[in-house]
Length: 50
Image (cartoon, rainbow, N blue to C red; front, side, top):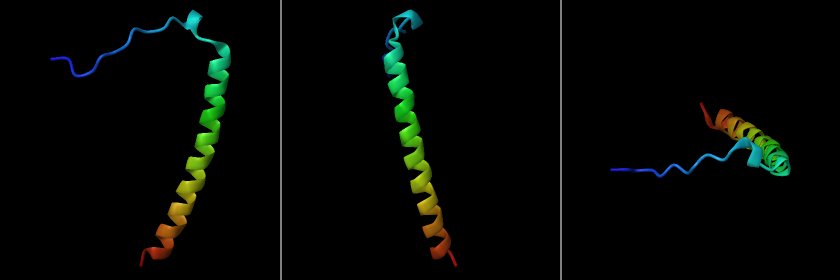
């Protein structure tokens, strides 16, 4: 029984460099948001913890 179908790997020569650049820009933006929200959560947790 196969639970997950794994797609065929793409050769690195077929990967568009512009897509990789956009991907890394998005990672940076998301990472900043995660850090911001984590710090907010941490402060709220500290104020609510006796």
